[in-house]
Picture 1 (cartoon, rainbow, N blue to C red):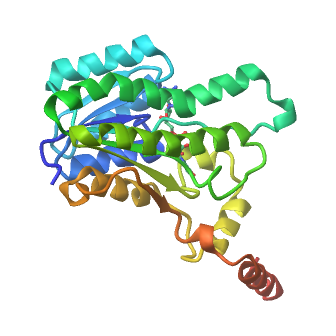
Picture 2 (cartoon, protein in one colour):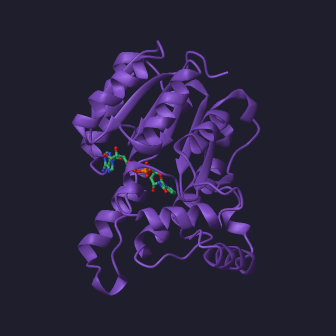
Picture 3 (cartoon, protein in one colour):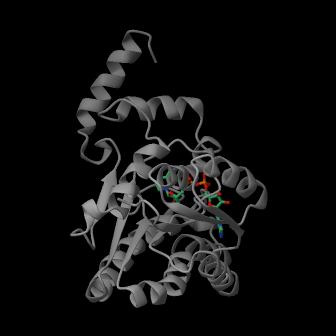
Length: 266
Ligand SMILES: NC(=O)c1ccc[n+]([C@@H]2O[C@H](COP(=O)([O-])OP(=O)(O)OC[C@H]3O[C@@H](n4cnc5c(N)ncnc54)[C@H](O)[C@@H]3O)[C@@H](O)[C@H]2O)c1
């Protein structure tokens, strides 16, 4: 269903983005991976190529308009078209609101929200020309369902991603371009492993109704669905991928954790 399509994945050199690139390739899509980390990008390209599709790795900072435009024009030179855009770039260092400078705020809003504007702006004219396109934006449950200390900018940006998605979906529907968003719960990636302690990870597994941590493939599988013809009548939607975390009953979770403590299992 996405065989021979061309997908751009931003921030695709590691974590969720890399898994998205791998899963799209596994289903036959050619992939352009764009990331600011040249080192991770090299390894990522080699891994994705193993699926036998064409892979282009481009180093670019997704917050810089000239670099984004150059990267998209390189993709067009190589493939002539873009069918799928996955706006995945994001960053989430914790910073208490009272310590946050305006400079940090702007930098983080640029990474988590403006990057999406820049890539979409560069890609959409090509999609309009062909009256076809799938845009998939990675949001988060933070800012929409969960308030998290130290992530005020992130909550603002990720809720912004949903507003961006819905309004853009309305505007691009006449061109048969669908625009959807995915809100993952915590997903085990290098980014998360670098800030979560092993105990936090274990507790997160316990509080989740499905009793495990989210994995990059959980998000990547939904991306492939939204990119495929199976999702041709879905646009302007937000799909939460969190194992049920956002509807969990806190009383039930506390009871389960206390019981485990009593048995000495936590
Ligand atoms: N991991 C989670 O628990 C989780 C949960 C909800 C949403 N998300 C979202 O999923 C997306 C991916 O998260 P992840 O955990 O895989 O992150 P990660 O830190 O593991 O990987 C992010 C990738 O994006 C690249 N990147 C960052 N800033 C960039 C920039 N300015 N230009 C180009 N590339 C840039 C990095 O080099 C890296 O390869 C983000 O949008 C994040 O907010 C993650």
